[in-house]
Amino acid sequence: MRPPMRPPMRPPILAANWKMHHGPTAARAFIAELLARHTPRADRTIVLFPPALSLHAAAEARADRTDIRLGVQNIHWESKGAFTGETSAGMARDAGAELALVGHSERRHVFGETDEETSRKCTAAHAAGLVPMLCVGERLGEREAGETEAVVLRQLRAGLTSLEAGARRSVMIAYEPVWAIGTGKTATPDDAAAVHAVIRQELQVLAPEGGSEVPILYGGSVNPGNAAALLAAPEVGGLLVGGASLEVAGWLAIAST
Ligand code: PEP
Image 1 (cartoon, protein in one colour):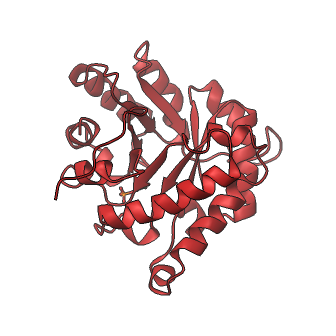
Image 2 (cartoon, helix red, strand yellow):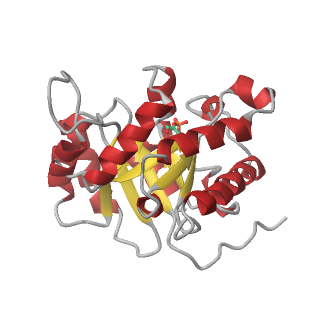
């Protein structure tokens, strides 16, 4: 069966979440190679999420190639203070970030981040001029119990609740089923499309003006072999890639999809 045609909308967003990989030296080397092998393309947006410590080096290495956008993997909701080890949205922006991941499943399920915290982080990101990329997704048990829609909607509503309606149009959403992250198990394009449709419908309620334009990315064991089919699924406006984004060749195979 031919995949449905992508409507003539905004270019897809290909985002790399490096997690706790690539310190400043490795980030510089990665970006130097990326720039040498990838010429700017108007038909896609590339975003890299290096570790916070590598953001400044990544921004320097990117130099004037602003077609490569940068984001921070996590922020604290306060702008400054006695929060040892944390990074504020303003600091991330100062170091070169334009986006902030919020509510990644590892933050939720390894570090215990709550829905309320994702809400505060989305608000802090927006206030500092970063685009929050709110991650939502169900665990395997929740999927098996038929709770996917309820979980995703709860996380979506909670994450955006403190943002004014006007600001909700300036976010990005990443649907990342937890059972697919780093496991090699990928949602089928149909699975992804079904959940993306639910997210889109809710975004139109939460953000009556602009909710239909908010990009919804898919993430979870994306690789060069499945990227094209996932990207062609209805309402999939981009891909958020972890493990397969760590090597330039593999990442470029996905980013050039
Ligand atoms: C992620 O970390 O957001 C992710 C999707 O990881 P992976 O591609 O490794 O499943």
